[in-house]
Length: 193
Image (cartoon, rainbow, N blue to C red; front, side, top):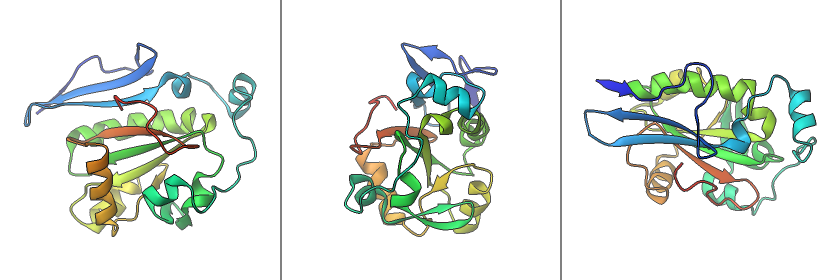
């Protein structure tokens, strides 16, 4: 059974300039956090409003160079709603990348995903954030069904070795977890995320 503390009703909660979703799963006694830097999560209503508030965001996305650290990290292909897409094109012109570690079988994930998805579609994507779903699903059909409910990209399911590498690299001990990376450097922007 999962309980939620300080769960936001409509907006993200602002704690120390970072928006944090916190929940505790009693089954393994580990707290789980998903952190989004506040510069990405200030509420806005439209793409034009965001551009006026944040003129430094890229307006004409350009592909990443093929030797970019994110291509090394995520591989050369990602999955979008329309199928396979090159990583350099999909992540070009973005300010930050959120790696979203999640799975369909996980109740806290199924509760968090709609809230995260709503904030992404209403605001975060217009501020330069791209999300890449890193699946811990037990089979490819579960992955496809769960990814269909998400508005963002995914690491291809068959790349299990890459998923394991990312989990170890970012010390993922529970899901859902979000790790936010700077798109220019590929480095973590928030050590709590």
